[in-house]
Length: 118
Image (cartoon, rainbow, N blue to C red; front, top):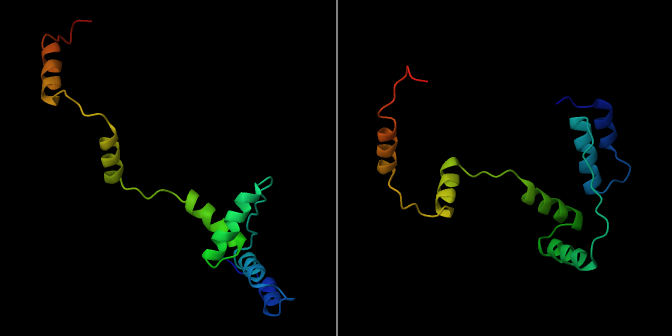
């Protein structure tokens, strides 16, 4: 990424920015784009209280806690193919049919196959 020299110069002596705002402005200066913002309206007071208590327990601001919750809930799954296959195998009902019997039945069905017949 190309740094914006004018924006970086302005950050050397920022006009009383708190730590969070300064970090936001540094990101804008380095990446050249603003970070998205999200406003959540109509939250129940109990949810807000829970978020504040959780943020306090984790030593973060409410905004940082909200960000951490969103990131953990929406990060891509890192489940390997083997783990996915094992999970799907465990969730499927056990099969009582032997695969050898299925193959044998399929072979018997196609035994009289004539490629010249329609």
